[in-house]
Image (tube, rainbow over all chains, first blue to last red; front, side, top):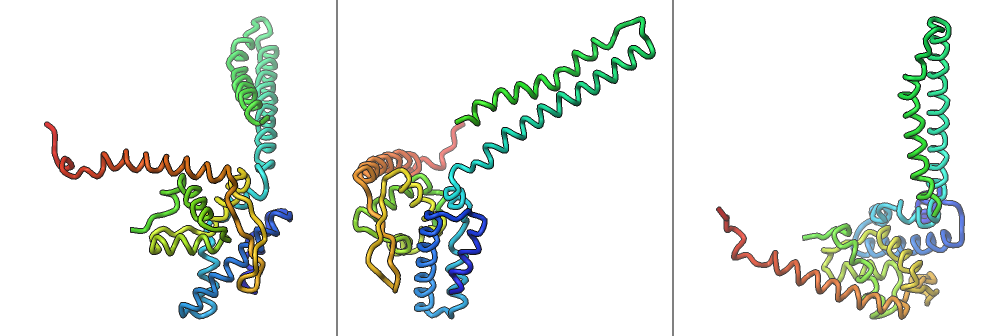
Length: 140
Length: 117
């Protein structure tokens, strides 16, 4: 019964579904049979169970399959890019506002703030381009 | 020489389909059969095996059913669909072609140590 506990523990982060239950049942039955075979070859029970569990290998691909086409990752990417865009827009607006203030406060006769503004504007523009390029990629 | 699953990744599907075409089998039976036939040189981890089975099943190349009880449990057996059989034949020809091409270059040991100046 130790095998059942361990396998269930390994899949605790996967939401419950019929598919999961059926796969778990299969894995547990297979691992138990493997442990029984190993014991028949002369291993003691603890060794056999451990070996059967370790040799299950890397379960990440199976988990991803069970969870479908990981909706978390696709949605999260979109949200993260939107945050990046928002950050760059607010950041550049603050810098421009600061320059406008310095301009009007110290040298109101010369309007120079427009020139560095063109430089700063590349920041949100490039983030926006990145956002546009990836929006279609996530849609499918 | 032991061969890791990574090296045969693209051909694991063909191996599984072949074993299932001989007779319907369940998961551990497949793993055991692979170990037996290759004298333990090709070891497929269970995780790799289940992932491959999931993929084949999702692509409708194999189907599963609950078979008879062995070792006190109802086992889930797999068998290939007609599509799976066709896919196997295709992959088999592909493998024979790859093997032939690589052999042509790597098997020729006579010219191995020649240096061109």
